[in-house]
Length: 115
Image (cartoon, rainbow, N blue to C red; front, side, top):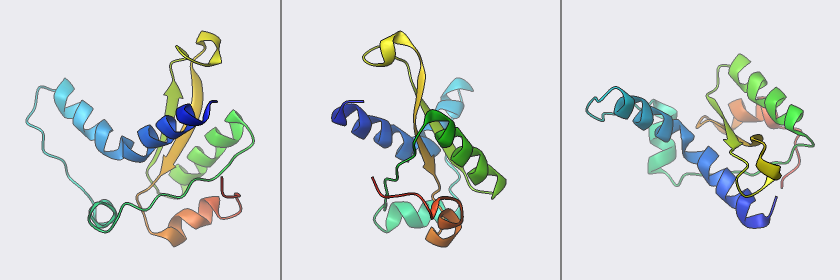
């Protein structure tokens, strides 16, 4: 991926915990009220830390996502539509895990290198 595309995909992933709740409420034609857990509230109010890590394949991305879910963490996969890259093929490009405490996320991703 181009660097700008990488940044955009990571940005999508980092906000998906909020965007998914908003989309659901909009689809239900409901008033938008978002229930944030303690970790989400802390993340939003204390600086929104993000750590970018690297995996070696789309399958690795999926495996880490599934591992996060098994560990009781929220995890969000981002699929690019393929309109500007990937020859028109929808492709998994990013995953956001959390918000949650660093030690909980490190239990899943601790061995991954920084990107």
